[in-house]
Length: 129
Image (tube, rainbow, N blue to C red; front, side):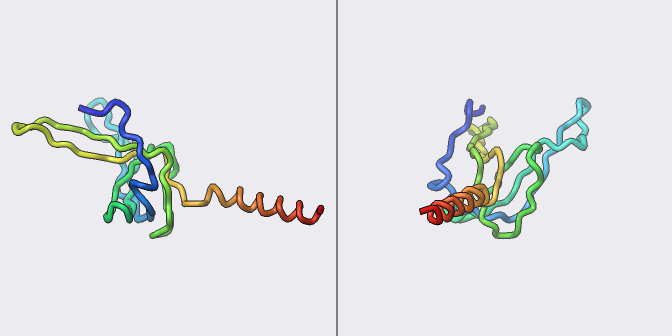
């Protein structure tokens, strides 16, 4: 049993500050005969999560380049979604939660270029006054 589209997450309330730890594992595609291929399906990373008070694992597609950030670098998740997998057993079901994201990026890295441009534009505007 699975949730249709997962649960969309409020990043700030759910995770707070996330810090990069390491690559945990790579999941490979299985061949038709059940053997493991060389093709990577997704990568799972360990991230320190201050709001949860523990390490969390986040999976991203293999199409995203391998992340090798500095240990404890502050990161953020792009479009994180929590989902579940339930497996029936003789007493009911075991449910496992997992988090997937489109990408893991350095915090404020995407805004850095915008801030530099804005400050540069303000400087030029002040000169023209």
